[in-house]
Length: 400
Image (cartoon, rainbow, N blue to C red; front, side):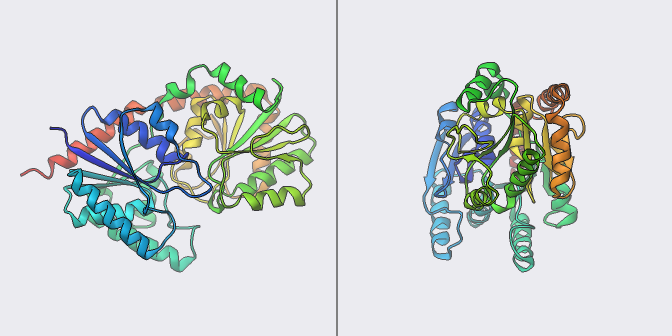
């Protein structure tokens, strides 16, 4: 009989957590009975049901009381519902992803004495989300949760360093580094057609340079800096360059207000507009078309774990420009497949961006290096095998 693994996600929405975990669970079914529990989405999010069509046959169950917002009463009810599910599926392993599921899921597993409790840090809340008092309490809680966990998964060596040395969340021997894996065939099949589809949709010429920021539009992602970089680039007289904001979220209004205040022509909800140089696409299901249609991907976050957008962009041969935070520097090769930027000065991003805009040959060279690095470092098969071995190793420790 296969061991039972219950995976708990904050939400099943477009984003790194679901895009990584759903295919991982699909391939792990060969050796484990997998059940996925997930919470209610935010109003500005879209559930990633297309992933369940790409990877059919998974057992999934939505827990409507598991929500991102903090509400002690609702959270307690969510905790009870998780306990019921873990009992029903007779979990041998509980694997949580994200902050809220990591808290309630691990507590429920500990309460039921589930033999193996694993948590993956896709990112963390240790800084830049709350004030110093709030951040301190987050670290205290996460340290205690780590103590009741069997194993912690870090997605990069830099993230492991943060967890062990910088924030002292868990000892080294409790942390396993398992890098994200990408199902490359989803992104790399039919790339020419995929690229043309995107560029036709937004009426881009073959010579136009498309620059993208991809992710949930929230303060921690710092996409306002992306717009400031776009403004500086356009003000310098660059022609045939277009900036795309792919995603949605609570900071969208602030970004639109910035565009209006600075009289920058833009289009919204993915609709082409003759003079628009900045395009808000909202959420997009066909991310292969987005990555292949772009020429450069930019990340400006204040805090990141292991950004999937940077990894997926490289599978599609796109050079990246990214802020030097968290585990970002482990996701590409600075100066080879992109540029790593220290700090958040507009001029530093513009300088890196101009190198790529002005030099098509450099874009192609970095894009080729990106594909090679991504294929060697982030193949899904490697992640699946590493996670399988982690589960089996932890289960073996529970046997007399």
